[in-house]
Image 1: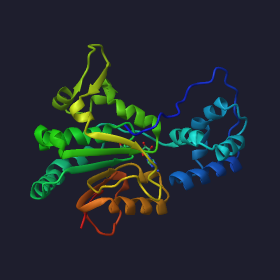
Image 2: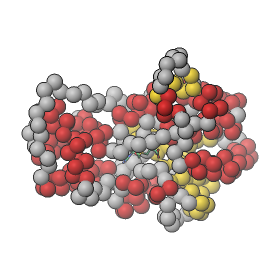
Image 3: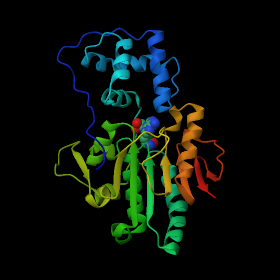
Image 4: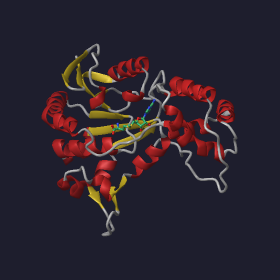
Length: 293
Ligand SMILES: C[S@@+](CC[C@H](N)C(=O)[O-])C[C@H]1O[C@@H](n2cnc3c(N)ncnc32)[C@H](O)[C@@H]1O
């Protein structure tokens, strides 16, 4: 596992009240999240900043958002900056989210990769960019395991990278452990085959099996960085519900980087609400699904 121990959100014993950010204070954070994470915040995000970040001010015994901004600017080891990233990222995810992508995967992408892989005897490399708490890469792993077969997969045929900027969700993803109710979108045959639980209690936690868990490596990095810590190219990249939050120029930047990290013939899957892009070097196959040409 290559993620660092994250800042977590332990509550302070005695919480002082924090005033809402002023317009000027809000603008400081607006510029900061744009510069660092590429987020485009409208005026409506002022409350989000207040609601999600005020406890960091309390924890650090700071009185105003200006004080907190100054504190972050002076934060030499960037640990408080990481708390801020964890607080302001939207991390909603679920197994089989946007189910039609997984149908397309089985009907079109996997057969194409099978053909391509057996011809060139290559290993499969997938990337879930902005993987949040792991539901997306685990869904990919279960689907691939079922389609390509245990012997191909467990003989090193597939490796999946799950990356995110948020260390809290990555810590949860690494455990591969989910409350029972979160498993409901998974086909029953797959939840029985790929998860186990030692408890018979209602809404107990279920653990993904090692054969699936070991296919995925979780790593923390910012998709807005100039250079990613990735040496290989991928045949399949899922980057869904990440672009949505970004400023248009940052979207273009990210799409270009993702295309660069795809092999020729590789596939890029964006979120359904992120459709409509015309991307250089990419053929559009279906709503939000592209192939590198
Ligand atoms: C809404 S979730 C989507 C999760 C998953 N892809 C899905 O569709 O279910 C977006 C994820 O992207 C991550 N993210 C946002 N901006 C990022 C950035 N600049 N670098 C890396 N991850 C980022 C967030 O932390 C969050 O976990």
